[in-house]
Length: 219
Image (cartoon, rainbow, N blue to C red):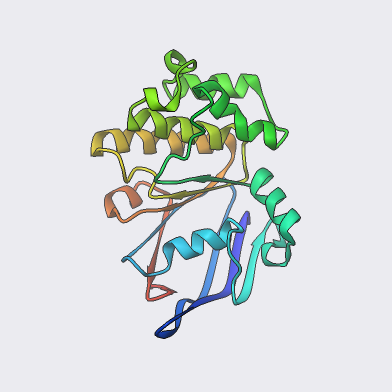
């Protein structure tokens, strides 16, 4: 398994007391598998994604990546994990405005010491970005910026891709095209994909759908 969560619990303390967000999550994701994570707002989807990304710690349970417990990592190990083992695609594109498209796409791969110009050329062709490589993010449409964000993530060929509503800011037709490209290229890279979405229609296009309800996996 690329990612394995076992008995994961997470709660937050507020002025109104402690709120449990995740109540014992068990989830396994295999290499090259695409999994949609769905559920109502507040069901714990983004929290689970943050734990898998090493951006937060579980209160209890294991978050294993390649058999290693992410929660046991120190800050340096956690930063290296995010640099080399996981790629994150946000609803907000988070491109570097001072870099052109070509430099944005290669940025993560160079940090991870996995820069491959042949693979990058394949990505830019499949994502339809070749005419825009010298442009800057502000010169692109929303759909084009999201394609750049996907290319940046995939360029490093991370074992795991985490995507949080990656088509949420796009119209339906553009979102469908972007999702098709992400799924196809993730398979080509051999990456597992865990994608948060509110859309049952989009979720049905992935290999498997997991529904969170009140901090637990339904069903």
